Image 1 (tube, rainbow, N blue to C red):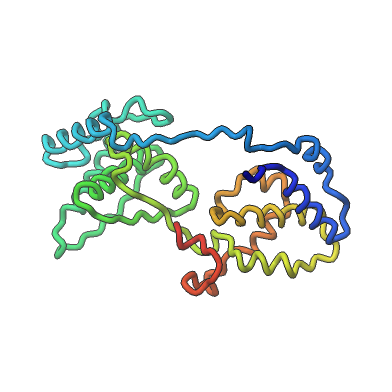
Image 2: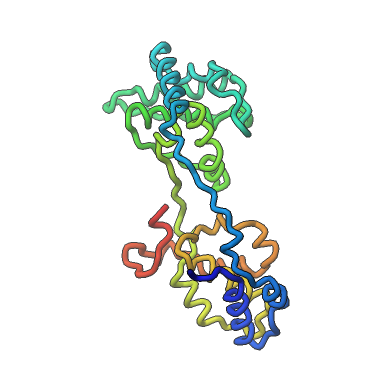
Length: 273
């Protein structure tokens, strides 16, 4: 079995620093002292599939029963506090404005295919807009097998929907694992492996600092496994500790005009999102 130690990391960092005539990384001595097999200390957390549990099925049956009683008017679910309460990190209260928002969107879905309709809706902060439009969207996807697109004004809201709001609504309705969802971002939100490799090979900073080199090593190791490439997912602590990384990212992100995912021979992260 291959040992999982910190020695390769220390060696790679010092090799890069030596290439640019920079002193040895000061953390190397600490890594050498702690150079034991890390695999012995890794606890593997098993994830269990709860999507088909009796509780989930019961939740969905209750949701569908209420909808049938309410003539499939999605907005009526907002009046049932038992559906929404006791959710971790999710505080719910009935809001008339949210009810009207959901009703308007539901009515749009009910139009015949020959009758196109557009709704322009403006609502103040705190009315619960996210749940207001996610509820009818999720139910349409589940009940009528529709595919829907939600366009957000900011990437921050996009992340909030993916990581918090959508999971909360699915959990409340008993639809975990029964409605698939994902997100799409522009190409420049991803690291281009081809540009990164060329950037590292041709790095021409006259007097590179240790921070510049360490930042490059971080990016190189980040994409080596073929799993990471979304710039948004880089922890803010990395930016705090590697000030130069923002400059590097501007030079190694995908070029929207030049990037052709289908023709690229390297891993293209945007293809898998």
